[in-house]
Every structure is written in structure tokens, then in C-alpha cells.
Amino acid sequence: MDFSSTIKHARALDRDDPLGRFRQDFVIKDPTLVYLDGNSLGRLPLKTATYMERAIREQWGESLIRSWNEHWYDQSAQLGKKIARIIGAHPEEVIVSDSTSVNLYKLAFGALKVREGKTEIISDDMNFPTDLYIIQGLIKQLGAKHTLKLLRSPDGISSDMSKLQRMVNQNTALITLSHVAYKSSYMYDMEWVTELAHLNNALVLWDLSHSVGVAPVNLNGAGVDLAVGCTYKYLNGGPGSPAFLYVKRELQELMENPIQGWFGELNPFEFHLNYRESEGIRKFLTGTPPVISSSGLEPALDIILEAGIDAIRQKSVSQSEYLLSLVRQLLSDNGIRVGSPEIVENRGSHISLKHAEAYRICKALADPEVGDGVHIPDFREPNNIRLGISPLYTSYEDISRAILQLKEIIAAKLYENYPNTRDQVT
Ligand SMILES: Cc1ncc(COP(=O)(O)O)c(C=O)c1O
Image (tube, rainbow, N blue to C red; front, side):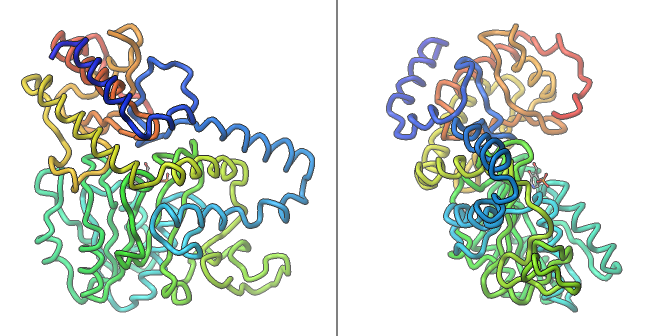
């Protein structure tokens, strides 16, 4: 397949795409820019600026403190209700707050208290480092009574379920994993792992950061106890938008929030001197929420709800299979290896490609002077080129142009023109 027939075919796929119209709901200043990093920072929805501007000019600028009663006090719970619809939870089981790291800390603490006496925590070596740091810190703070056991991936791409089965036992307090692995895109069978935890009377805590908004998540259906996730990737909430947490209804009363602040108090404006925890999910709040960035989240969630998560997943599957077919056709003898599971059911919405020169290849892809313009992937140590597919705005043409460009860069060794020194943020 040559360049023009590949592009022609991609355009035909775009014309037939039932979700194609949602691309217009995002700010796309340069239509030639190929953005394959929505798995790190989603694009800006068109309506976000309006919502944020309203929060700033009208709610803050004009209504001033009255906006707390009119809009802001319930915002975290209202947004939680919308996210609940995306992740198969009851509306009163999800709330928006803090960062993913802080939420993970809160829920892992609560889980260990609920399973007091058990001393093992299980995670894996493909988890996002912050998740492991949080657990390591928590173990220290709880007097080093717990042990963190890491399930080792055989190949850095997928997980071995029989190994996990052998690790879990009656002393397991908590299994905490990323639903979709940030590097390889491996997706756990949430229901199977949750059941395994419950057979051993352990709790399970999922990090949904790489699956929420793009992969099917049914927390209630799988009987999940606890979950956290960020909103700036496939939910398109913007840089620093607040995260969310989920606590199963039946567990809410049993769980304690380790950072009890006034927003989690039963009635903050009674200014009681002794903390009385709120009922329900609100007790997992701590302090004043980030109102301005929270207000940008609302229109972003609305787009996802309108498109529907099943349709989004369908397109994600179709696009990732398309990307892999191009990789097989065009890149198979170019030193590229696929660093994601081959089986689509085991995969989220990004594909990792491995190459010894991955970092410099990413630099060349993003250079406007090379080929047909800017292509933005991201790089993950030591050799992963991550290509994120965000079906609401990623087109088939984007994917074809990125792979064609990749072929060109590798074949002509154009990456040799770039230094190997890493940027602060990669
Ligand atoms: C799986 C996962 N968990 C947690 C985080 C960090 O989240 P936060 O910065 O909101 O704490 C990230 C960031 O990319 C992530 O990919």
C-alpha cells in the first residue's frame, strides 16, 4: 500500500464513522496536527471555556460568595453522578475530589482498616508508580505491619492470572491494580480479579485512569469495592482537573477517611469543634474543591454521555485494530515491536510500540519540519512510543498519517538528528 492509497482508505473509514461528528465538539486549531496523546491529556472541548468563563465571570465575579449555595457546594457530588453513569455505579457512590494519588491514599487506608488484621497488599509491576508510592508510604505510616507483594509481568506487556491466583490468600487485605496498564495498555478482567479478591475476603481497589471514558467499566456489575481515576485523560477535563473516587454503597459506613477535613464533616457550616463524619460518599471529601477546573469537567462528561461508552469502545477497538494492521503492513521489519496485547479484549485504547530509539523517534514525529507536520505521541521509558486513541476526536486519517510518518522516520533514520536528552515532561 502506498502513501496515497493508505490515506484514501483512512478517509473512507472516517466518512463511515458514526462518531465522526463529535470531533467538532473539540478545539482543533490546526487540522493537520495529529494528536495521539489523549491518553495523557485529552483535547479541550469547545464548551469548556464557556463553562469556566461563566464560573469566573458570573459565579465568582458577580454572584461572589452566594455561588457556594447556588452552584459550588454540590458540584463535586453532581459531577460524581455523571461519572457514575460512565463507570456503572450508583449515583451516590462516586464523588469528584483531589487527585488520583490522594484518593488512592484515602481509599487504601480505609480498606486496610476494614480488613484490619490481614497484612498483605497485592499490586503489580506494571502499575503507575504513584499508586505504588502511595501504598509504600501508607505501609510506613501504619507501622510497617503490611507487606506489598508485586505480581511480576512475564513480558512487561500482560499479566499472568494463574500467578495472581497463587499470590492471593486469606491474609490478603487488598488487591489494588490499574484496570488498564499505563505503558502496555493491558486490561485486566475486572470481574474475575474482583471475584478472586472476594473469595479470599480481600477488598479490591481499581485505578481507572486509563480506562474511564474509553473502555467498558461496570463497577456494580463486577461487584467492585473501591475505585479511583483521573479526569484529564479520556474524560477531557483539562490539566489538573480533579479526580474521582468510588466507594461501594455497602462499604461506605465501614470506611474511614484518613484526612478528615471540614468538607467531609456532617455540617461544615456548624463549625463544630469535633469532627462528625458526613453520611455517604461526602465523607471522603477533605477541603475546598477546585471549583474553576471542576466547572470545565461538566461539558466534557456530557459529550461522553451523549456519544455513549459502548459506541466509544466500539470505535476504539476498530481504530486500534486498524493501527495494528498498519504497523504489521508498514513497520514489521523496521525494528518496531508491538508492546501491547494482541488480543483486543485484553487491551485499553492506546498502543505501545517499542523501538530502541523510541525517544528520538518521538522527537522527530513532533517536529513540524519533518514530513507532513506535527504528530504528537508520548514516550514512556525505556523504549515505548505510546499512541493514544481517543475515539471522540481521533480520526482514521490521524492514525494512518502517524504510522506513515513513523515508517519514514525509521527508514531514513531521521531520529539521528535529535539529542537523547530527556525533557522534564515526556
Ligand atoms: C494510572 C494512573 N494513576 C494515577 C496517575 C496520577 O494521578 P494524579 O496526578 O491525579 O495523582 C496517573 C497519571 O498519569 C496514572 O496514569
